[in-house]
Length: 152
Image (cartoon, rainbow, N blue to C red):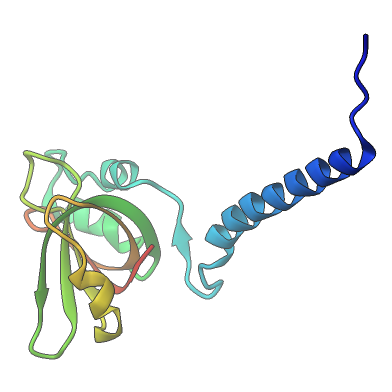
Protein backbone atom coordinates (compact mmCIF):
# COMPACT_ATOMS: atom_id res chain seq x y z
CA UNK A 1 0.00 0.00 0.00
CA UNK A 2 1.43 3.31 -1.06
CA UNK A 3 1.12 6.41 1.13
CA UNK A 4 0.53 9.73 -0.49
CA UNK A 5 2.41 12.65 1.02
CA UNK A 6 0.21 15.74 1.18
CA UNK A 7 1.20 18.40 -1.35
CA UNK A 8 1.62 21.02 1.41
CA UNK A 9 4.27 18.93 3.19
CA UNK A 10 6.05 18.26 -0.10
CA UNK A 11 6.21 21.95 -0.96
CA UNK A 12 7.33 22.82 2.58
CA UNK A 13 10.09 20.17 2.42
CA UNK A 14 11.21 21.34 -1.03
CA UNK A 15 11.39 24.99 0.08
CA UNK A 16 13.28 24.00 3.25
CA UNK A 17 15.87 22.05 1.27
CA UNK A 18 16.21 24.88 -1.24
CA UNK A 19 16.80 27.46 1.52
CA UNK A 20 19.30 25.18 3.27
CA UNK A 21 21.18 24.61 0.01
CA UNK A 22 21.20 28.34 -0.72
CA UNK A 23 22.76 29.15 2.67
CA UNK A 24 25.36 26.42 2.35
CA UNK A 25 26.37 27.43 -1.17
CA UNK A 26 26.32 31.15 -0.48
CA UNK A 27 28.54 30.57 2.55
CA UNK A 28 31.07 28.72 0.44
CA UNK A 29 31.03 31.27 -2.34
CA UNK A 30 31.33 34.13 0.18
CA UNK A 31 34.55 32.54 1.39
CA UNK A 32 36.05 32.83 -2.07
CA UNK A 33 34.42 36.14 -2.91
CA UNK A 34 35.38 37.84 0.36
CA UNK A 35 39.00 38.15 -0.74
CA UNK A 36 39.46 41.50 -2.53
CA UNK A 37 40.26 41.04 -6.23
CA UNK A 38 43.12 43.57 -6.09
CA UNK A 39 44.98 41.31 -3.64
CA UNK A 40 46.63 38.43 -5.47
CA UNK A 41 45.98 35.23 -3.50
CA UNK A 42 48.36 32.26 -3.70
CA UNK A 43 46.24 29.11 -3.57
CA UNK A 44 48.74 26.87 -1.78
CA UNK A 45 48.68 25.42 1.72
CA UNK A 46 51.47 26.40 4.10
CA UNK A 47 53.22 23.05 3.61
CA UNK A 48 53.01 23.23 -0.18
CA UNK A 49 54.28 26.82 -0.22
CA UNK A 50 57.08 26.04 2.25
CA UNK A 51 58.15 23.06 0.12
CA UNK A 52 58.09 25.24 -3.00
CA UNK A 53 60.32 27.85 -1.36
CA UNK A 54 62.56 25.18 0.15
CA UNK A 55 61.91 26.32 3.71
CA UNK A 56 63.03 23.07 5.36
CA UNK A 57 65.48 21.97 2.67
CA UNK A 58 69.21 22.41 2.90
CA UNK A 59 69.22 24.82 -0.03
CA UNK A 60 71.38 27.90 0.16
CA UNK A 61 69.74 30.80 1.97
CA UNK A 62 70.19 33.00 -1.11
CA UNK A 63 68.34 30.45 -3.24
CA UNK A 64 65.45 30.27 -0.76
CA UNK A 65 65.19 34.06 -0.59
CA UNK A 66 65.27 34.31 -4.39
CA UNK A 67 62.42 31.79 -4.60
CA UNK A 68 60.46 33.74 -1.97
CA UNK A 69 60.97 37.04 -3.82
CA UNK A 70 58.91 35.66 -6.71
CA UNK A 71 55.89 35.66 -4.35
CA UNK A 72 56.61 38.75 -2.23
CA UNK A 73 53.60 41.08 -2.05
CA UNK A 74 51.06 38.34 -2.77
CA UNK A 75 48.55 37.08 -0.23
CA UNK A 76 48.18 33.69 1.42
CA UNK A 77 45.38 32.11 3.43
CA UNK A 78 46.69 29.53 5.89
CA UNK A 79 45.75 27.74 9.12
CA UNK A 80 48.03 26.87 12.00
CA UNK A 81 48.35 26.94 15.79
CA UNK A 82 48.66 30.10 17.87
CA UNK A 83 52.14 30.37 19.39
CA UNK A 84 51.83 33.87 20.82
CA UNK A 85 50.36 37.37 20.46
CA UNK A 86 52.08 40.64 21.31
CA UNK A 87 51.11 44.28 21.03
CA UNK A 88 53.65 46.64 19.49
CA UNK A 89 54.25 50.18 20.74
CA UNK A 90 52.64 51.38 17.48
CA UNK A 91 49.37 49.70 18.50
CA UNK A 92 49.69 46.95 15.91
CA UNK A 93 49.46 43.33 17.00
CA UNK A 94 51.83 40.51 16.11
CA UNK A 95 50.49 36.95 15.89
CA UNK A 96 53.02 34.12 15.78
CA UNK A 97 51.74 30.87 14.31
CA UNK A 98 53.25 27.40 14.35
CA UNK A 99 52.69 25.06 11.42
CA UNK A 100 55.47 22.50 11.83
CA UNK A 101 55.81 21.25 15.39
CA UNK A 102 59.36 20.45 16.41
CA UNK A 103 61.02 22.40 13.60
CA UNK A 104 60.75 25.94 14.99
CA UNK A 105 58.72 27.54 17.76
CA UNK A 106 56.76 29.40 15.08
CA UNK A 107 56.84 29.54 11.29
CA UNK A 108 54.80 32.63 10.51
CA UNK A 109 54.63 36.11 12.03
CA UNK A 110 51.62 38.21 11.00
CA UNK A 111 51.12 41.93 11.66
CA UNK A 112 47.53 43.06 12.32
CA UNK A 113 46.36 46.64 12.75
CA UNK A 114 44.70 47.59 16.02
CA UNK A 115 41.19 47.26 14.54
CA UNK A 116 41.60 43.46 14.91
CA UNK A 117 42.45 43.71 18.65
CA UNK A 118 39.22 42.21 20.02
CA UNK A 119 39.42 39.09 17.84
CA UNK A 120 43.12 38.64 18.56
CA UNK A 121 42.68 39.00 22.32
CA UNK A 122 40.27 36.05 22.31
CA UNK A 123 42.91 33.69 20.87
CA UNK A 124 44.81 31.34 23.17
CA UNK A 125 48.15 29.63 22.75
CA UNK A 126 47.73 26.25 21.09
CA UNK A 127 44.38 27.18 19.53
CA UNK A 128 43.79 26.56 15.82
CA UNK A 129 43.64 29.76 13.79
CA UNK A 130 42.98 30.59 10.14
CA UNK A 131 44.36 33.83 8.78
CA UNK A 132 45.43 35.65 5.65
CA UNK A 133 48.10 38.22 4.99
CA UNK A 134 50.56 39.68 2.50
CA UNK A 135 53.95 38.00 2.16
CA UNK A 136 56.63 40.54 3.10
CA UNK A 137 59.80 38.65 4.00
CA UNK A 138 61.29 35.24 4.63
CA UNK A 139 64.18 34.07 6.77
CA UNK A 140 65.08 30.37 6.97
CA UNK A 141 65.55 30.66 10.74
CA UNK A 142 62.50 32.73 11.72
CA UNK A 143 60.09 31.84 8.92
CA UNK A 144 57.65 34.05 7.02
CA UNK A 145 56.58 37.59 7.88
CA UNK A 146 53.15 38.78 6.71
CA UNK A 147 51.43 42.16 6.91
CA UNK A 148 47.83 43.26 6.42
CA UNK A 149 46.68 40.34 8.57
CA UNK A 150 43.07 39.19 8.71
CA UNK A 151 41.54 36.45 10.84
CA UNK A 152 39.37 34.14 8.77
